Length: 158
Image (cartoon, rainbow, N blue to C red; front, side, top):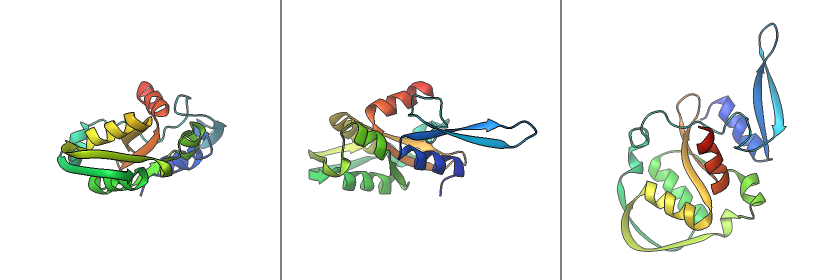
């Protein structure tokens, strides 16, 4: 459901690669694939939303009841994506290079009401993750899960 550019960026990121579209003399575009991360000048994995995020994803600001006892991080991320009605993708290369195996992470929280945005922020800080809603070139939202360092590099670029 994502645009070709974002799908290519997501796929290449899984191997620590990225791409840059280059104009060709006489017209057309050439794709240059190179090793790189969010801090390099590569075609990004999605774009920062130009509209206020709560307008684009109203479910992000809604308070939900949270009572989590030792939840697996994979399952929790899946629930967040389902509540936001967006697909989600992991940056496996960045996560594993950082020594983070999301499938082994757990999270527990006493009963509380908080927004999905706050929950994403809390679990990100606890496990050194970056969870962000991004938009592809066609305006489709998706949840991108990467390291906090990669998340911050993206935010610095955009």
